[in-house]
Image (tube, rainbow, N blue to C red):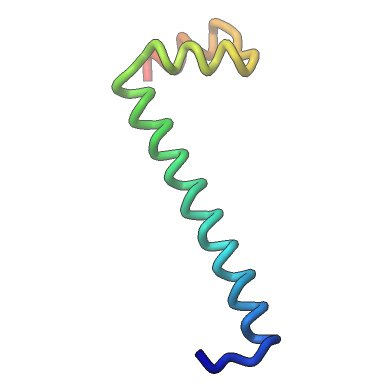
Length: 62
């Protein structure tokens, strides 16, 4: 590949940003799916993050 070193560096940064954004969205999707399919997992995650029972109750109703 014939790429100028400066441009190559910028492309690398863009790729890193894109990969990070994609992985973040995948994590959000996985969390949504797991919470809809496994209520227990949702309860455990809220308790681990210090969430109170009201938050869990509201999340269960929605």
